[in-house]
Image (tube, rainbow, N blue to C red; front, side):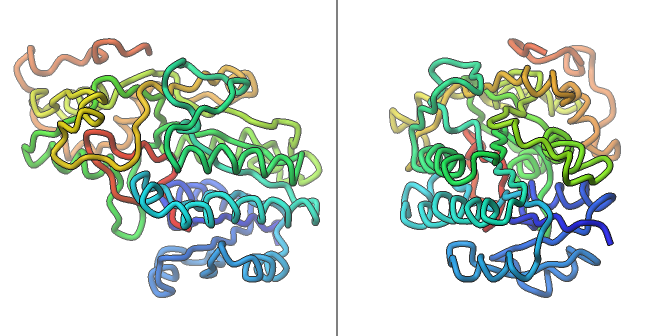
Length: 356
């Protein structure tokens, strides 16, 4: 039997894609929390799974002892920015303490551990950010992500911290991700307000999942040689090659779909601070948290252009007949260089959309 890979948050946006990418070479075990057992059985199929509260240390310790994983990817989190702001104790319990506890358990057993962090550990004032830039979080979610990184590396010096950008994809079990909601709105002819000054370096969930397995070392994706898993990586950024605002992402999506670009309506992040939004945010939103990811590129991480990723995500059947030439421009949007409750004006920016 292949070695066991434990994936937490396995029914979340990211975790579900890691499962698909890892099944070729691993005996995958996935954990979940909010999902029902019946849903999990339908979703996982032949993948072993178990429901667990990662905030309960005794449950987590018993789970590790029972599964005996050869490696762990921790993608579970509470990723709703406003929920974390309103209920910081919940965020601290899951996003901070549970992550450190799991890393410490893996350290005790010398089990390779990979933690999925976020670009939102930064405030957006000095992008693009490298792995060496100090975290400057501006909301509870980002603060707990930054503290978790420090706590994990203190508990387990060989842990790998992968900071992820905005992830674009479709969630499992009938849940709606930001991008699913965005595309659905556009296809129904609905105007969507999107931040024109909130810039990210997004990738699809599939690209991120393969990147996580690849960068962690050959033991995760290729020949499953546990001894070859690279645990000297430390922190690593897995951003895409394109810096793009949410508004520009909307424009690019409309162009691929062949729809009217006026359905995307730009607004400013400053509007959220000025109270001009119909539904004000509880958590502060970052502007430009683009990740500089050349270190990962040098290690072999090679994300395609964002346009090609979106074209793969958007079925041809969804695309409208070709419009007039002035509406069907296929050039990149202006300025482009290359779970949870979300708001289209700034769809939480959550990298994993995972459930704990």
